[in-house]
Structures are given as structure tokens and as C-alpha cells.
Amino acid sequence: MELKSVSSFDELKKELKKNEKGFVLLYKPGSDASECALDRLENQAVEQGNIAVLKVDVSKTRDIHPKYNITSVPSLLQFDKEELKNVIKGCMTEDYYKSVINGLYSKSTSAGGEEKQKKVVVYGTPSCSWCRRIRDYFNEKNVNYRYIDVAANPAVAEEMKRKSGQMGVPQTEIDGQMIVGFDKPKINRLLGLN
Image 1 (cartoon, one colour):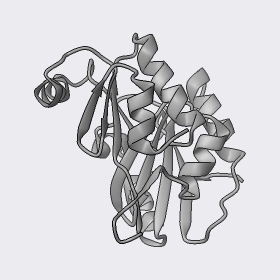
Image 2: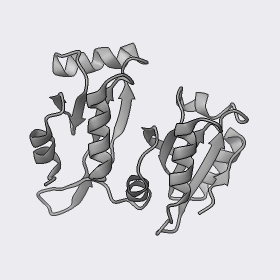
Image 3: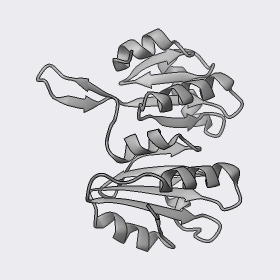
Image 4: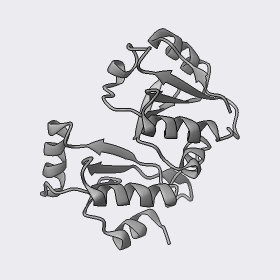
């Protein structure tokens, strides 16, 4: 699928208004990670209608990423209607992009039998190898998550420390429950993974 290019914030808002869900890849040509994300995202077919999948070259379009406080690319912005719901940073697998776009999220079942998406946040730093392993694991298992670089955001690092009592990374928050380190058995139990 060829991603539609967007060249201004106003154009982005118009595209998002037309659709139930929207995905916007912010990328920079010439960057290996950006080219990887663009290539893998373009290989995904959209199985549902009312989904916009767009791309923004941040070297040409400079008014979109500041609106959403995006400081690194590639970043895939996930919208419900016009509301930003998630930011996925870096180049992910084709299966991961497909699962995110087609709504195959990590789900749990409530007492009433309804499925709901669990909120998963990974706190990490660029130099942390265990942070990369957790992200790779979630990508492999098609778990939808938000990644936050705490090195780039001291306020979020303090919030993470307040929640868990720890400063070390990686830390994963699943529906408000903090997990310090890559505790695979606990992560699997909370997400219902094998």
C-alpha cells in the first residue's frame, strides 16, 4: 500500500476527520530506521475501511511533530478520530504494524465477557539493551504498547520513579501495575501470553 503524504498540520487534521482511525508515520529520508519503518509499513495491507495511513517527511513538513511533542523519528502516531492515542517509536516488524493497524491488540476479558485493550507502557533509554529486548518481545507477540524514552523526559522519569520506587530501566506498566526489569513470567501472566 502506498502511504499518502501529508505536507501540513491542516492537511493532517482534514485527513483524520474523514476516518475512524488514523496512523501517521513521521520519518526522515536517509535515516536507516526511518527507511526501515516506511518500507515495512508500506508492505501492510489495511483490512478495514475508515482507516487513514499517512506519512510525513519531517525534513519538509515542520509544523506537525511539534504539535505532538515528537522529538525523534521514525514515530508512528496512532489516532482515534482526531485524538492522539499512542506513539510507537522506531522501526517495528511488519507483523507488528499489521496488528496495530488492523486492531489486533493485547486484550483481556472483563467479568462481563467484553474484551478490552490493556494499557502497556515501556519506560526505557536508547542505550538500554534490556529495553530493546522487551520491545522486541512485545513486537513478536503483537502487543500494542507505548514506548517512553525517560532519558529525554526527566519529568516522566520522576513519575516512573514515584510509581515504582525505582529509577532503573526497563520498566513496564500494564494497566497501572509496574514491573521493574524484563520479568517475562509476570508480563506473560498480566497480558495472558504463553
